[in-house]
Image (cartoon, rainbow, N blue to C red; front, side, top):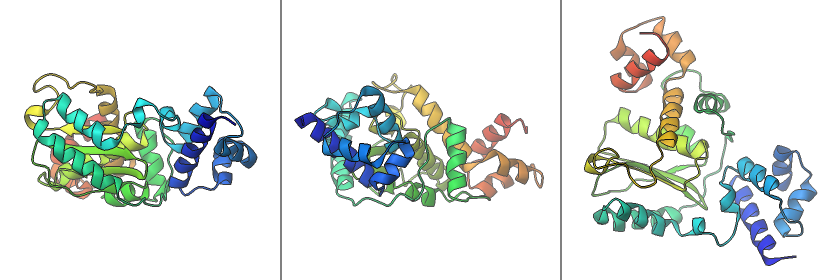
Length: 278
């Protein structure tokens, strides 16, 4: 029994327990036996690459998160400081590090709904179905917490719109409290999108103002594909096609529809265009 196999087994067990799953629960999702899971977690059986990828997907983590001693295991506070320093936001570096330390000390939330990542639309619809949300406005805070994700208040003195960090105790989201409620709802859904779509990075920081991508060039590591997918997820989660079409039958007034869904008129206008309703 190798030390690395034991360490991998411990990481598998920790990821499983964060979801409040038994070994049998995980085995059922993998189509394997409970004995196989037990052997992996005890380090008695070495995982192949294919099994590692499948296992990571089922647990909602990156494959690298199940490997010991890699650079991806650097402490989150250190990683958040590095993100700020890479965009010359040195004033924010201390605050981001303190935020991560506070977030790391929070207890895990029970996960009520497990949604396997698919397309942004299908993933959003699967979450709405699991949570039995059938009419607007979508209760975004309840959905976030039902996915085992915490929303943490913090007073950042700098240009940050929102962020999400993936911690050993579960993901934590922060959104700028100074923004309008409709924008906060969309930002929260956007960050939840990064989490449920299993985007590989453990940190997503949405800088605003002069630090925003495009203001002074794209940030190092900025992934426009992930941002686009998170936006699509948020739009489909907060403004589900079926619900929008149903409400549109009663009124086509943009402001009224935006009020029904608790989104901005601009977001609703884009959604109606994408659904070919205007």
